[in-house]
Image (cartoon, rainbow, N blue to C red; front, side, top):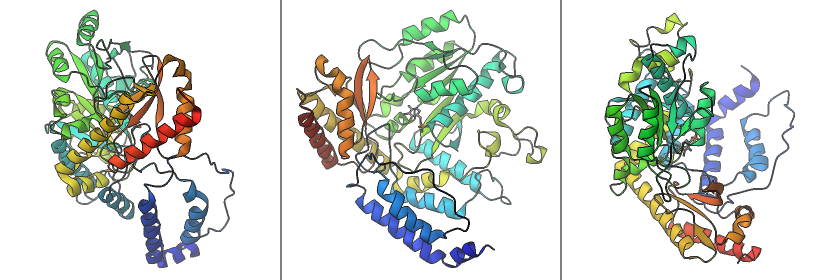
Length: 470
Ligand SMILES: *Cc1c(COP(=O)(O)O)cnc(C)c1O
C-alpha cells in the first residue's frame, strides 16, 4: 500500500475527529456567515508528486477554501430555491460515503441498496399522499428527474404511433404542450432531441397568474386532431409558486390521449400541510412527477426523485436498459435501477432522505412547509407596506416576487439587488416577470426564523438609503 494511504488508514480516528470538529464549527456559525462573496481563487494550482496526506490537506482547505464558503445552507440564502441540510440528513449523507455502496444492487448477494431506495420511495409516497401505483427512483436533481420522465414520455408517444424511438431514433413529430415550464424542462427537450423550441406555449390564466388556461389548452389539443402529445404542467412555478388545476387536467385525460407530466420540484411538498394540500388535488392521476429533495426536503445536494406510473414500466425499461449487457439479466424480471434511469453506478442517494423521513416524520415536514410559508408572508407584508417596493404578484406559497416601486426605479432593480447581495446578510436572485425586472425570495430552508426575515428587511432598508432610492 502507498505509504501516505497507509498512514491515513492508521490515523482514521483522528482524521474523522477533526472533520467532525470542523463541521461543528461551521454549523454553529452558519447563521452569521456571509451569504455572498466577491473573492475568487487561483485555479491554476500544480498537482504535487507525493501527496500531503488527509490532515495536511484538511489544513490547507481550512486556510485557503473554507473562509471563502458562503452560508448557502443557512437561513437567509433565498436565491433560486435553496434548501439546507437537517442533522438527520447529514447523518445519512455521511454514512452514504462511509458505506459507499452502489445503489444498483438489489439482491441479498449484491447488497440491499436498491431495496433501501425502494423503501424510501414508499415512505415518500406516504408523505406526499400518493398511491403506490408510482414506481420511483433517485437522480441528482429535478433537471434529471424531468429528463427521466420526459424520456419515458417520448418513448410512450412513439409507441402510440407504433414506433420505437429508443431503438430507431425519433421518426415522428413529438408534440409538447406547456404554459410556464421551468427552464430545465426546456433544456431536457434539447437533450432529448425534441428541440428546445419545439413546444406549443399555452396561455396562462388571465390576471396575475402563471397557471395553465384550461380552455386554451383544450383548444390546442383539438388542433392536434387526436395525435398523442406530452403535457408539461407545474406544481409551483419559480416566480410565483403557481399551480395548474390538476383536477381539470385529469378530466381532459379522460377525453384525450396524452402523457401528463408534473414538475413539482418544490411545490409537491405543499401537500404536507392541510392548509395547502388542495393545491395538489388530482395530481395522483399524472403519468409522471418530478420532485426535488435538496429543496424543501432539506437534504444535501444532489437529491431528487422521479415518479412514473408503473403501467409505463415497459417504456421506461426500453428507454434506459443496458440492452447489450446480457449478464445483467432481463430488466423486467430482475429489477435493477440501472435499467430504469439515466445513471448506471451511483451512490445510495436514498439514505439521507430515509434518515430525514424517519427522524422528522410527517409532522416535521408539515412544520417546515408551514414555517416557510409563514416567513414568506412575513416578508410579503413588509414589501406590500413599504413605499420603496412593490409586489409583482401575490405571494401564493413560499416565493415572494417583487421589485422597486415606481416605473422610474425599474432600471435600478438589478443594481439594488447587487448591493443588497454584497452586504452578505441575505441573498436573492433576479428575475423577469411580466416584462418587469424583479427579485425573487424563495423560502424553503428549515432554519429560517422570524428574526432572519427581520435581519433581511433591515438590510433592504439600509440598501435603499445607501442608494438614495426614492
Ligand atoms: C429547481 C427546479 C428545477 C431544477 O432542479 P435542479 O434540482 O436544479 O435540477 C426544475 N423545476 C422546478 C420547478 C424547480 O424549482
